[in-house]
Image 1 (cartoon, one colour):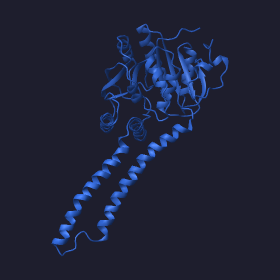
Image 2 (tube, one colour):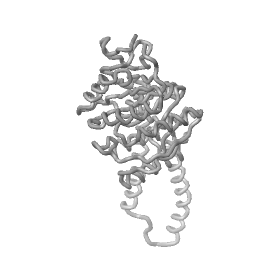
Image 3 (tube, rainbow, N blue to C red):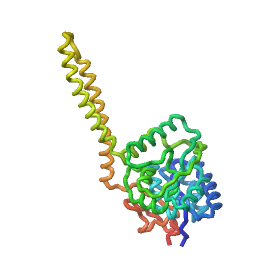
Image 4 (cartoon, rainbow, N blue to C red):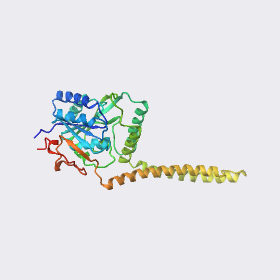
Length: 338
């Protein structure tokens, strides 16, 4: 039976052809020098390029340490991270993107902090190379806004690049919500946490998978997953309008009595006010719809993801996480299942 690794490195992969061999080379160099036993769990999240073929080549090259989860389709970055956490075997689990913007060379520092007694060691982006000023500004705005309106304290300027103790991983794995925000969930469970600063490198191969649309969706998942504030805004707004109406009514009466000229007459003024109020009403309907849609996602009870194949991962009955459809695999696909 293969010895369980001390450190599991989870890397979601979506169209990362050209990066995977470099990722493995840098990871193996760093981890072998550290003296830690380790595994690399890569999740193919519906890649349309040769990413899976490259992962398979790495698995055949290093079958004991390179393990692969192949999704039946694209389920999204946060879900891919979840799958890696579900099947990681290590006492410490490191989340890292496959694009090499987060340096594998930082992992020994994360492990060192973990051995000091911290349960979560997150990487703080002291500098972000190759990213537009707009993206940096919106990221800073998002973290600060989220901390203001949610009941959790998400460390500023952090991503999913972090190390988590096995106890933290087990706690997060019990949270099976569909609209996932891993960094928020990690903060929510608590435990002793600390940060390590680093410089986030520019992407050298391929294009970013986090478009503005995906970033906005992730931000919405983070806010709606940990805050009721957007729903409460409607209450504050309606209260402000009520106060404004109470104050404006006597002013209008006095002005109408004090002058013979028409005051606030005509359909244009009325129509403008109605349109403004309607715009706010539709905004609040949209916010309510987002919460209702997330409730609908949960009550359907569908699995978070569907696994087509696994390679090097013991997918026995005892290892199937909640609401996960196991793949049909042959014995040769799970060489360490005994």
